[in-house]
Image (spheres, rainbow, N blue to C red):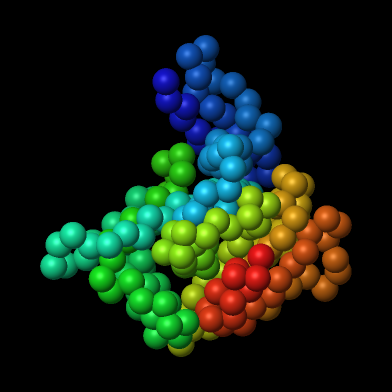
Length: 208
C-alpha cells in the first residue's frame, strides 16, 4: 500500500496537508512524519534535512550509500535530488575537506519520494555521504540544512528560523546550520551548531 502526499494550494493564506489512503483523503497533522524513516536504531548514511515545501518547513530524511565501485566508472545516482549537483558536492567534499569518493559508487535518496529542489539540501547530502563512507551513524535527533559553494563555504538558507523551530517542535535537539542562520535568541530544547565551511561541518559531525 502506498500513501500519497500533497498540498492544497487553493489559498495563499491557509493550506491543508492531505494524504490519500485506502479510505480516501485524510488530513495529516504532521506531514514530516511521512518522510522520516523509523529505524530501530541510528544507521549510517542517514541525515535529516529541514527543507521547505512551498512556504512550510518540512523535515525529510536523506539517505546515502557509499560503496566500493565495481566498474571502471563509479556511479553517482540521486533520487529526489539533482544528480549533477551530487557530483559537484562530492568534488567540493574532496577539495575542501579531504574526503575522497572518486573510487566509490555514491547513491543518494530522499525518503518518501519527495523531490528536493533547493540547494539548502547540500549539507544534508554531504553529511549523509560522510556518515555512510565512515560507517558512523549520525545521532537521530540531529537536523541540518545549508547550501555549499564551490569554495567550500556553507551558505545560508531562506527562512532558517522557521526550519529550526519546526525541528525543535518535532523533538530534534541539535542542528548543524550555516553560521548566517544561527538564531539571535535561543530556541528552547535545540542546540544550534553554526558552521562556516564544509570541513568545519564534517569536524562537528565527528564530535557528535
